[in-house]
Length: 266
Ligand SMILES: NC(=O)C1=CN([C@@H]2O[C@H](COP(=O)(O)OP(=O)(O)OC[C@H]3O[C@@H](n4cnc5c(N)ncnc54)[C@H](OP(=O)(O)O)[C@@H]3O)[C@@H](O)[C@H]2O)C=CC1
Ligand SMILES: O=C(O)[C@@H]1CCC=N1
Image 1 (cartoon, protein in one colour):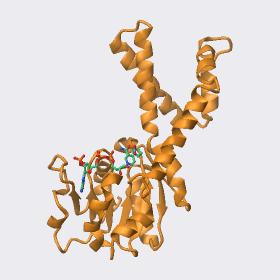
Image 2: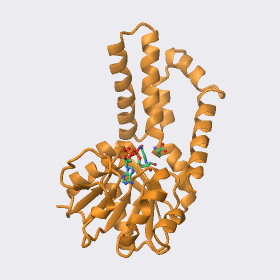
Image 3: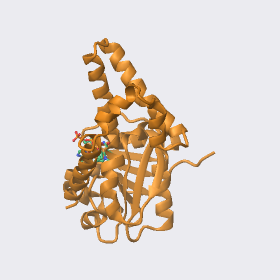
Image 4: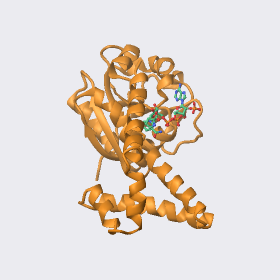
């Protein structure tokens, strides 16, 4: 049996923070406080507070998870600097660098910067993490346990990689959901009834994802397996794979998101 998690302090319980909390609850929450002025309560097996001033003086979290919007960091983080002595900070905020967070939490604060994604809500997330200076082996191991509760985790040694990671896996689910939306709209355009169009588009995206996850084959080979010579898919792919179509659009989209992550740094 896995051990209960140590005391946790979650700052911001929106879409991503809430998804991670669900994973931790399934893993076995210990004493947990959530601070969010706006979240709907109550939160099962955690104490929801509206203001950091309400945190009991003797509460000693092993990890403080920073899950508010990046733009809220300057106003939000200083109230948590008092935990820098014992806790590891795990930030999932897009763009915000370890150095920026140490500027608000204290130069000695141990900070892990991580980028999860929303499939974490069904424990199929993918997180890439970077450990800042001063993070101990035990703190890194705790951060890994927390992030692994919602899916796969990988660590990088170069913080700058977190910007393209944010563009690819952080935002990636949005691009896949967009594909489902566009397939649905195109199906309706071709005369398929809306309810059937919706169900078949969702099932096609979800089923393809499941096949990709289960298969040892490359994505390119799985694509080729669908593409019969001189068949229908070949015609569709001639449109989508033209250099000026998806290859360029995806490349530009990832470059734009990466640039935005860098902009959010300061
Ligand atoms: N959504 C995603 O797919 C991913 C998001 N992230 C990162 O996660 C972070 C949160 O994103 P997301 O969950 O989408 O955003 P949400 O807006 O859903 O969540 C942020 C939560 O923090 C609350 N909040 C606002 N001010 C404070 C405060 N001072 N103290 C505590 N809580 C506060 C917000 O309330 P209110 O909304 O009412 O302002 C909201 O409930 C961002 O930094 C983002 O970059 C990372 C990976 C993926
Ligand atoms: O859009 C964003 O900024 C956040 C980070 C990755 C996914 N959502």
